[in-house]
Image 1 (cartoon, one colour):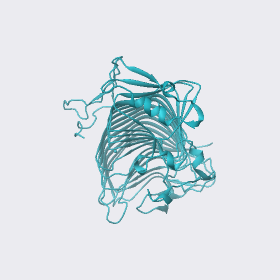
Image 2 (cartoon, helix red, strand yellow):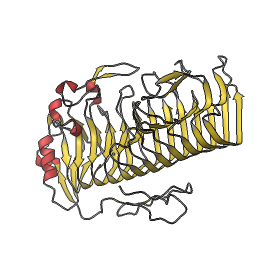
Image 3 (cartoon, helix red, strand yellow):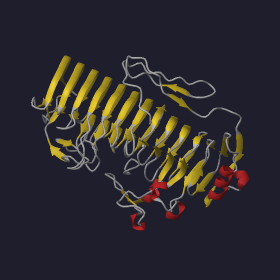
Image 4 (tube, helix red, strand yellow):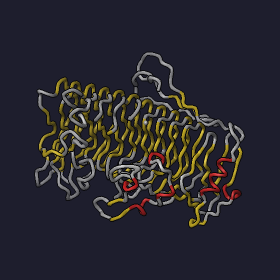
Length: 480
């Protein structure tokens, strides 16, 4: 959703080396002691077989299903050899679920669209296999070519609402429960050496790109667009997967944009760089599924605009988080309807039990450096009695607070679980259950708000917060 990773980063210098013929990613040692760096091996450029789906009878008229022709082309690929299955441009290929096998890369060429079917019968009986494109237990697989994979997400809207759309649910089939029974767009499950590059993913009905229990993943030059009012159309969900690089991606969607989760095992060595994000939920969120540990994650050179929450941790199930770096990030966060999780926090770090009988996970060794934000709410740092936040460092931050929407403020959001939404005055940084926090060269600016909604630069109780260091901390008003 794995071998123990190297221990934590001692510097901000992260390197990604991409040789010409194959991709080799060297993630840095996670402490000053020498350690062997993990290696991501992605498909070698051996001589590849090229097969066109048109040669197998695909019409590409966007009306008649091409599923059989596409699957036949994939199945005809020779075993143990790279195979590019091409979708010629100028056509729209309507399909039910198609399955990749080892060695196969879908080459959806620029000007071609792979269009997911909107009917229940377009997907397998098992709800956990509801994808337009699915690879299971495969290696050296991927999608590229510059074209589009489209899930026709708007066909799953039963009522359009600017606050939040009401969506179709196939729960009446008995295959799943609740109101989130819709197909995902692209899934890789228990795969190795996954490469998605030069690709546009559009209008998922549910999660867009789902990486589950995989090793060695490269996601680069991928554009994701989901309807801004549609819930649960996450951009990239990474579960229990290790050695992942996401770079040069553009994600504009309603729900969480990049969301690492741990359901059945830990998640190590994720690097996200050079990307742009807009969302009505969290731009980057660890959790809320968090039964196992997160370790060795780096987020660098990212722009987050008009989002409900910037950098988020929702640790609710007992997993521990450590050795995470956020650097060179520009953030803009604003209020949206409170039916969406988030209250315009640029940085949100929380751990608390999801239920009364849930375990409490800890969060430690976080570094936030060179962060600039303009937001309608402050930073929220909240541990719990059995799950402290420890060794947090905020270095070179410029935080600007001002209001520009008419949505109500004055709430702290602990969801999911925990205390829910709680009335609380607005502060620059709210702190609870912390042991070890360094604030170094942090500049906090407040708009001269006639409603006097801003109250305190720092809000904490000494009974739950210990070992705080303030170096070059500044707080001041400014006129808009």
